[in-house]
Length: 281
Image (cartoon, rainbow, N blue to C red; front, side):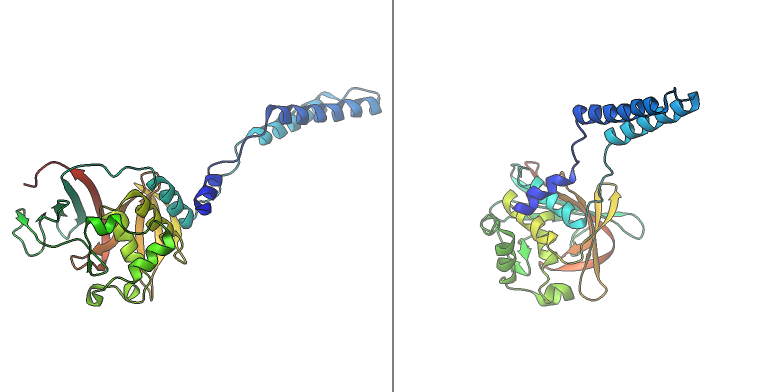
């Protein structure tokens, strides 16, 4: 986890100490005094004003905050990994997932509620009556493989071991993006940190594994976090907004399918998750 510790260096450099500022001021004043002695006369008034301005400028430069270095996409993900370790998952009867996105005419929403023993209800799935909450036997899936709470809790918390484990899971290739089928593993890692009830240490490992993706870029701050760009095979590109302090993906242009795969979207999809005791209705 050395990379995570190194991220702390992004925050700020320490300001110069009072002693250092005082020494700088004394050296400048000493040079001015020696210059007056060598000339044998006082500096004219305009000369004193210029000298004073120089002293003030040097002092201001000394105590001013350093320019903030731009935060890379990799560093955003590493900061999220560090935060994820310390964010408790919460407790409740149901794991509640809410997806929202902008449809052609209005905002669209899907919800699901899943108990620890695998019972599930959903609302607004494509095959159900709009608005109705129905029993839904669809399990959690990752790369097409059915995965339950016990399997999620047993996933490796080391980034490389986690990627190896995911790569060995059965797949539903027809539901995967070309990048998934070629083993880039970006989509399943995003699934672990957006929709599944993944333990804190595994979420942290997933963020760190994503940070190692070649070409990840930070497009800058936007509402809800930092917008990251992750290139995939061909011309595909995942866009997602990451809040590194909350260790969550606020929204992304990728839709996670019921088969455990993924599909690219033309618009952002927001996903929120929580444990709740409120019954679906």
